[in-house]
Image 1 (tube, rainbow, N blue to C red):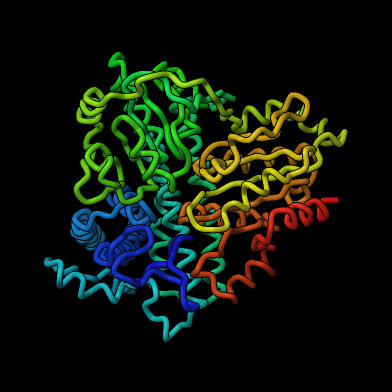
Image 2 (image 1 turned 90 degrees about the horizontal axis):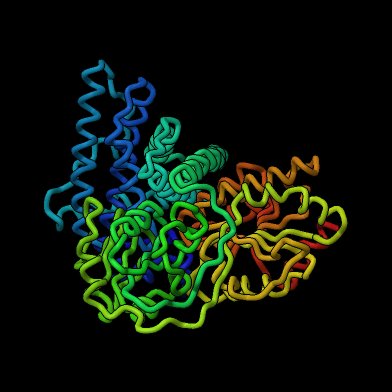
Length: 550
């Protein structure tokens, strides 16, 4: 195996990438190789899907499968090799179906890549022997590490785009331009492009596509559950039976809340599910009791301590410990060998487990944090914000967004928030907020200094806030007193970064460590072309941002 798609990748002896029997995330080499083969097949499937889209006769089943299959290959999502052998077989079946459809329509099918003709072996041993053609570094000796790195940036960004699109799709938000755009990107990658300017343009095109996807996801979430509003969320338990829901999928949380009505079971959110409390139709469930725990990397201890079953709805899953292995369930694209997977929204086993366990035996003293500052809330207060900027009460905005993780260096984001001057406002989205969202930052007039915009899925809301403020001040977003500080971890963050670059946002600070697939040459391109800046230390970066805005 070889994998360097996330921030936790092994880095030793001057080399970056997990190339051992087991990756840092817990993914074994068999699963890693199967994921590579699945991606290879999806490139070929995307080629055929692209042609159907061009004919105006897309195949919905194939389009949905592509989203789901790409999602399963994200970091910390699915570790079950049996799932991937099944997906590989299904990809071949769909590929043959699409080919037959095109041939029946008179399509000559010329110019297809090797990926579109790939025939996966039926036996696992033989299948794994085919994996070398699908490695992310295949062809390195011919094209060089810069081309491989740019291809990887596009592929990993595409995985993030597909994950966001899947979240939107399960809530009924299906758009032809999204499916067509993803198929086109797969078709592009299938032909092993090697021209760096062309690859860079494709990366920006993918960023533009992700903006459409993020808007669709925003419409899906707010259409289903209402526009988020400022909401105090309890972070200490109340006595009673309990279920913990982690991940990103609001639909799963809603279905669990609906299934547990009248059972006396309290439901708690964890990790990226925290922003769910701001959505009126979710907050309306009285047994949505609060948020338990913190970011994903702390789940092994937090899940062990939780006195009830856990449902993991999407990334990020870590290898379950024995203390809770028999009471953690997976849903959607998530999987781990031996864990029970929820099918057809049937939560009977989860409810049964909750009723059999003690739950919380007593109610703790109440503590809360404030969430729900989506675009409507902030734009509704635009006059207050604008006046505060004009009067000098607000000197600068810092958007501290992105993923959290266990690697050293992530205390930078805590230090950044804590050292930001008192006349600055902190906006945050993503699970990186857990580094500082329990700290006291006070207010500037009626406005809290810390504004929780949501999870990474809510990036569209943050972009709209910045665009609206720029419009109100009659300037470009880059002219606002605004600095973006992005902590990346996995492929959704790569997709969002491409969107920021495609929108022309400059001087984005990125860390804590830079992606291993970004070679020095590629990093230099990002620095010179887009003003991307690796983080240094919090106080120096704050001072530099304020000096630039002065």
